[in-house]
Length: 127
Image (tube, rainbow, N blue to C red; front, top):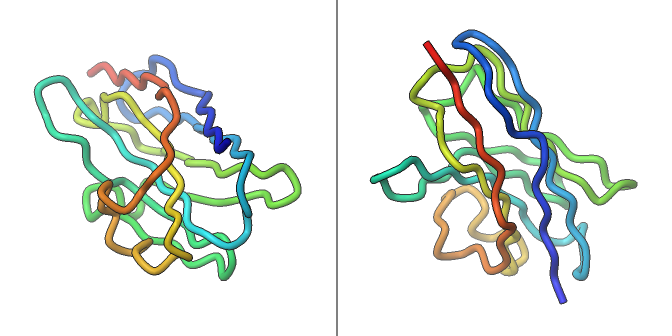
């Protein structure tokens, strides 16, 4: 059974930083892709960033490029999302998810290709 568990959310003021963690277990950790997605109230869930576990390639949505950094610690089976220069529009529930197609669809940041999801962690940015 695949498990994805997010942590690290919270409330910060605009311009602040947070680091989210995603602990993954139950599958071949190094052979796939892990992504971060977010969903704000009344909006569709959108892809934020993803990392190809084998090669370490990273992908970002235009809205977070230059502010967010996705990284991984293979020894801990954990993927991180460092979020800097946070804006009120970054407020959302953040989810991590695992893609099970060998990383082929990692760059698309499309939730349709991500099979296993965590419960989410809330990020609130105040102005």
